[in-house]
Amino acid sequence: MRDPAYLTPQAIVDELDRYIVGQKTAKRAVAVALRNRWRRQHVEGELKDEISPKNIIMIGPTGVGKTEIARRLARLARAPFLKVEASKFTEVGYVGRDVDSIVRDLLEVSVKLVRDEEAVKVRPRAREAAEERLLDLLLPRPTQARGFTDRPDLSSSGTASGSDSATREKLRGMLRDNRLEDREVEVEITEEGSPFLQIFGGAGGGVEEMGLGGLRDVLGSLGRRTRRRKMKVPQAWAALTEQEVEKLIDHDKLTREAVTRAEGSGIVFIDEIDKIASGRERHGVDVSREGVQRDLLPIVEGSTVTTKYGSVRTDHVLFIAAGAFHMTKPSDLIPELQGRFPIRVELDPLTDEDFVRILTEPQNALTKQYAAMLATEGVIIQWTEDAVREIARIAAEVNARTHNIGARRLHTVLERLLDDLLFNAPDIGAQTIPITADYVRERLGPLVADEDLANYIL
Image 1: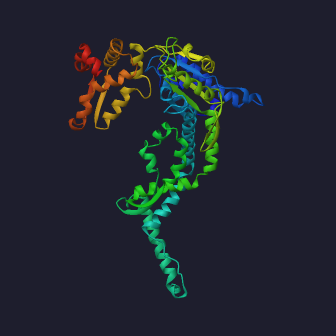
Image 2 (image 1 turned 30 degrees about the vertical axis):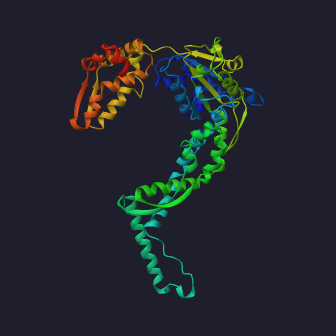
Image 3 (image 1 turned 90 degrees about the vertical axis):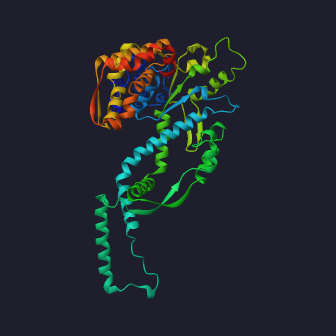
């Protein structure tokens, strides 16, 4: 399925159907957008560079699958994927994240994606090299003689060498048979991160918001230091393997591939784009909404952004925007930005029947997730069809009476339903518990009946 040549629009929709219920129109739109990328890459001549992606706006309430569709699409295509919230950005000149950080973050995702792929290729060799280093720590090799008087006894050197070799091979066998797990060795490790940057927001988020992303890149390498640390053999082997992986990866090639992947296959999902749309009646303090749109425009249109890995062009990055548009309309966006999102799809609100399907059909259905988690404690839960329908009915009813948060309501309802089981599972022992409609009504009925409680708990 991952071979791009076989990712036809229908195949993409079929793959998305395994995880997302309904929303055929949105699935078709993203499937065509992804297939058009493959088509562009196979166009010959100068026309290839003239074909730009057709960006998409998804319109629909929260919890109907907008983000999940984009995320699954990126995973299917093995493409760098970045989700950002439009409301977190501010116009140039204000304190907050600048839109160029979208491209920098996308490239970081791309670098990690390519690095992980390369690491898989070199890890067997890296593990072998790490094994040799670990054996050196467990049984240090004899030091070389440094002077005339330090020369070893030639008559016994062969015997000593053979003895060391035999001991080393014995240790190797014990290491591979996991018989040295309690032994400790001292390993030199590199600690990442600058204390200065940690003060301003951990992984650099605070530094970004102060507009000092470049400073983070420069100071990041200065903050690294190495130190020796004692650890158990399994942890030491893993740490040494990662060090060897870093040595075996061609970082220049990795960077070039990551830039190419971000430019040609990157997908940026801009959530809450309706929050930066300004209605006709809005003025004054609704600062910089239009300014953020104008700052976004060059990125979406196609521009070049400088990063620590080099320049990145956004001409062929696919942008998928999403918003509920309760208080605004897509036409409230500035005309130039509207024109850069030519495809608009409206996602349908979820019904009781959709909830039933969400609870049963997808490979990652919540009912399957909870059953798998409880099975680790020896507790087997069996969902009856009536119970699933009752859960779906309750979720839809609470959505209708309070805020409609779509399928996310199912998380709340199921967590409340299984609260006692999740807490007591380690103590009740192995047993099979059927989840019936009566079981659901007994635990959730009073909460649903009391509107005030439902507002706060469900």
